[in-house]
Structures are given as structure tokens and as C-alpha cells.
Length: 87
Image (tube, rainbow, N blue to C red; front, side, top):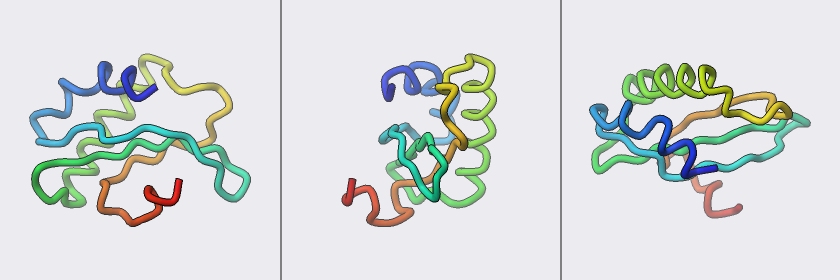
């Protein structure tokens, strides 16, 4: 799935100097989440995450890429925390 997301949104977010680091699903509090992790060679501030999220959300919605059993799309930067190491 990571390759599909990268192919769909990669060119659209490269001007923000961010890229897709990881894509995976989790279940939290009974909700199935589709997680997209962004990374960059620079610090990713909240404005950049917000702008990238708008672009990614629209492209994923238009392409109907999310599986029907997904409850939420979560887009965040790699610096969000150490939970990625716990998968």
C-alpha cells in the first residue's frame, strides 16, 4: 500500500520537501486507522503537515484508495513519537 500512496501523492507533496516514510493500518479504541507517516530532511512544522494533509486527503478521496473498513485517516510526521518502533 505504501507504494500506491507514494505513487499517488509523491509528486504533489515534493514541493513541501516532505515524503511518505511509512503507511500502515492500526486499530485504536475500536477504530481502524490508516496511518501515513511523513518525513523530511528538515523539521516538519504544523503548517507543513496541515498543507500536506490537505493535498493527501483530496488525492486519496478522489482516487478512492482507502479500504472501506477504514474509519479514519491519520497523517503525521515521523517525529510524532516512538510508537512506530513498537509496531
